[in-house]
Image (cartoon, rainbow, N blue to C red; front, side, top):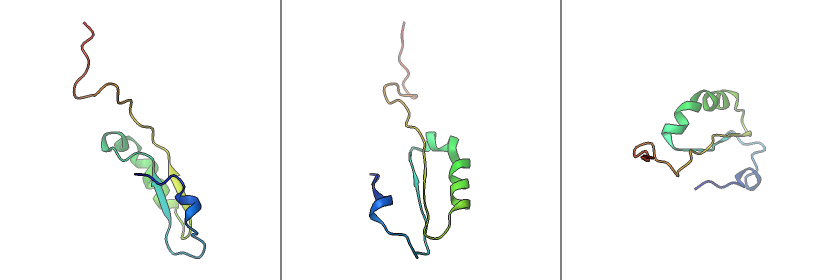
Length: 70
């Protein structure tokens, strides 16, 4: 579960860590955005916060069990 307010609940001033929130943890989707995640990690500075926006797939149609429309 993602804490959407973590940016506001954690004071990172003076901290030696950075927080990067990845907006979707589903590997089949995340795989297409690895370059964005890597870029966010490379740009992170101590005390920084970044969010990598990754859209969620439409769950109405499962790629494993496609609907038959015929």
